[in-house]
Amino acid sequence: MDKKINLDLSAPYKKTVETIANKPIAYETTGTPFWDDEYISKSMLALHLNPDVESASRAHEFMDYSVDWIVSLLGKQDGRILDLGCGPGLYAKRFADKGFSITGIDFSQRSIAYASENYGDEKNEFIYQDYLTIDYDEKYDLVILIYCDFGVLSPENRMALLKKIYRGLKHGGLFVVDVFTSNQYKEFTDSLTVEYENDGFWRADPYINIKRNASYPNQNYLVQYTIITAEDCATYNIWNHGFKPQEIKKVLLNTGFASVTLYGDVTGANLTDETPIVCAVCRK
Image (cartoon, rainbow, N blue to C red; front, top):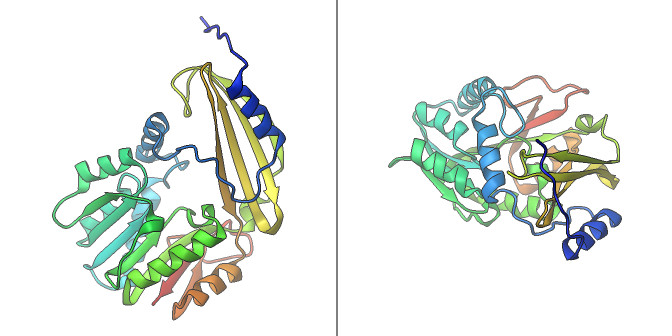
């Protein structure tokens, strides 16, 4: 039997109306916890651990190929790796199995707890921290930021993070990062939809999901979720940017990297005019 919900249309719903009426400025945040939300982080972890679903992590078979390729670029079977946005440690585990020492950083307590419990030891550590606050000096042979997280950051935060990554790499070290290209958004259209769920990714109880897709100048894109329950409402702004290959290359070279080589994905696929992803391999 469907649950009947009596809504008190008071202050929370006034906020919802204002949110829908006012399109946010590019990369505006709402301050609502996402990665560390008690329920959402549980949903995210389940997606990470599903080997065939790519909404949180890439398919696990792809990760195997990806790690093999990156190790071939390094040309050795040991060294220290910094995994930014490591989630539950799926890439870290694969690198550790090949003999590397891992530092994984993520802003989800639940994911870090999983990684620490399953893969942490004297060589591999997992830290609950916002990776924008990292501060290392020439410590790592490799830094990875994989699954297009870079474009989620505002332009200012991207530059700040790149400086930290560059400083954290040893001389000759590699930084591997992937981003979406504008091809990813060829079918993206501005829209506003409303869905009802008895339970799901966002909440354990019934909720209404108001989803807004909005495009912005300079290839910036917003997917906004406003979640309304019987008790409250919350809005989550998920941003990204469609990079031109030469745009991301220029940004990385301006950071100071000696060389930047572009690929079609994080397995070394050829870059084409139609690829939705570009992977950059940067050497300090």
